[in-house]
Amino acid sequence: MKIQNIHAHFDDFEFTAGGLFTIARERLGSAFTGQVIVCTDGRAGHQFRTREETGRVRLAEQQESARIGKYDFKPLRLPDGSLPREACLQVTVPLCAAIWKTVRDFQPDYVICPPVVSDPLSGIHVDHVAVADAVRKISYMINVPHAFTPEYPADETVAILTKTPVVLNAFDEYNKRTNTFDLAVDCEDAFNLVCEMSWAHRSQITEWLPWVASPVPWPVPKDIAEWKRMRRAAYSERNAALGIASDHLYEYFSVTCWGAEPDVDALLKDLPGIDLKRSRIDALRKRLDRSPKV
Ligand SMILES: [Zn+2]
Image (cartoon, rainbow, N blue to C red; front, top):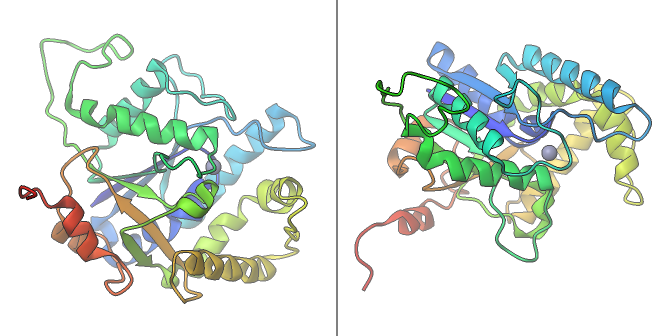
């Protein structure tokens, strides 16, 4: 089982899908392969480091997280070899081409990306919505072999059939009160490791996030024990906002029809940790029901 997480920034993965990857790796063993794609250069979000230094530090932090979490990490490169710029990501032909190529190369069963935002109440992060939009826009193109051969030249008389994945949307903090979910995945067994992965992003959690959160207090965690206490409180708050009374590490996913047609029973079999009581399986089945509506 192969899952590819495509997100905007260094650290997004740890806060949205790191638990699912961890329990999948622990429960499925060598039957699971996970890949994390980060679609921006990480140079924008810091208050005292230069752009160049910030990008370099963030890359090293993600590599450290990947070492701890034992997942494959790749920064997305545009067809000209450059990294897309953070804080102003737009859905362009080069971005679509690069995402198309990375999905076709990895051939995942599932892609996880941020959600497309439609509610006017939603907050957004420009880079998150660009990734969401781009994934949605290339999803049909995944099995269109020559969609981006101008960017990635290939023999256009030869077509390789490529598996189209099911696309899931992860919870997005920036959407604030408009988040929703189909699947609640209990990742409590992965709590310690996920905290260790996110702790690798020290230039964010001890420098940038406390500064940018102002005037909302974000205390600077002095060590990983304090960071774990903060994460426990944050998970509790996220669960409560979604109507779940628990302090467990839950991760939340919505099912889309952007790529392959989702099959609920296959999803329940493939993805470990789905809490059947807390997921909205009946509503999901109704949403995916293709019988004629009277
Ligand atoms: Zn982000």
